[in-house]
Structures are given as C-alpha cells and as structure tokens.
Length: 90
Image (cartoon, rainbow, N blue to C red; front, side, top):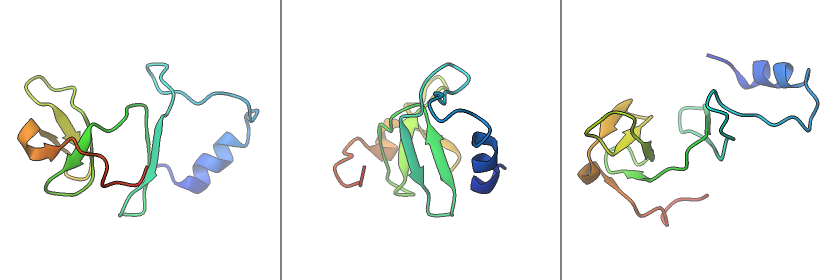
C-alpha cells in the first residue's frame, strides 16, 4: 500500500498543474477519507450507500451485480444498497 507520505513525495516531483488520472485516462472525481484511516481516490462517482457497511457503493464491473462496496470488498445486488446519497457529506 502507498501511504499519503509516499504519495506526497512522489507528487512533489511533478509540476503542480499536471492532471492526475487513472489507467483509463479518467480524472479522480471522488476523494474521501475512510473510517479505517485510508484515502480513497476514485474515478467513479458513488451510486449509493451500502446497507451493511454504511459506506459508499460504486458501480460494479462484475456482470449480474449493480454495485461494489470497498469496505466489504464485495459486489452487491441492488437490494443491498440505497441510491439515496443525501445522507452523506460530499
């Protein structure tokens, strides 16, 4: 795992106006700190809130599932999360 310190050291070597993108050339549009002292950089907006973990749900890339919960490290069916994001702080 890369720490924030390592990330800062790495990024300090680049001009500040460089864009940061993922492997699909997508910008990071959702950046949050998690309950387990991690920083999550996502190129995808969350689509809901997990009913089990209370964390964000992102679109799944696995056929047959609608969402993915990073906290649970599981793909989810639509009934396992709510699409109401109004209860979160963006």
